[in-house]
Amino acid sequence: MLSKLEIILPLVLVVLITLPLVKAFMGKTTKKSAKVRLYTHVSLFFALVLFVFIWQSSSVAVLAAEGDVVADGFAGSIAQGLGFIGAALTTGMSALGAGIAVAAAAPAAIGAFSENEKNFGKSLIFVALGEGVAIYGLLISILIINKL
Image 1 (cartoon, rainbow, N blue to C red):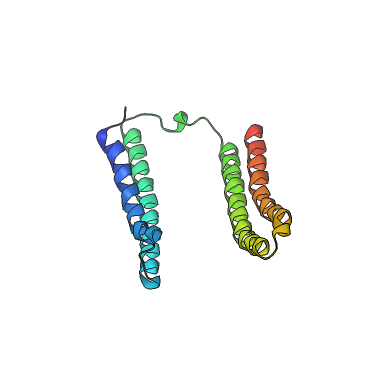
Image 2 (cartoon, rainbow, N blue to C red):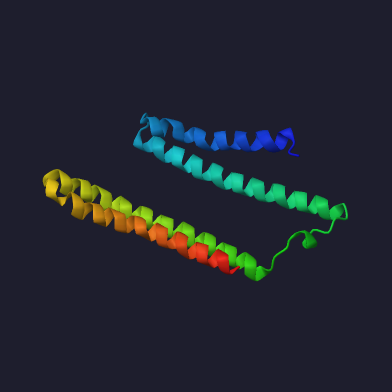
């Protein structure tokens, strides 16, 4: 059963991370304040990751101090863990590449469509090709996980 601290603390941390972005999404920031908000957002994210890492490692240390067998609680090998990391990297990097491709292709497609309405089908194909990269990455990660 989760304690109140384990429920409320992540919610508070998520709110603290998203607060610097509220005015940016509303369009009420200048270029300089947007940079400050971005740096604040990134630093809060990494602080949260560090906090969670320390919190989890302290809970593992408490379990080990109480005499529980921590190592036997994990049913997997290093190879299986590396397989999951590989599947996660495949999905993440392919989605990142697809985002970059769509970010480049979509404005060009909109520009081509605004100049000539007959270019809609051709321009849509280029945007869909960028999205296909993410689908292929997801497919490969599913195949990796099926082998584990």
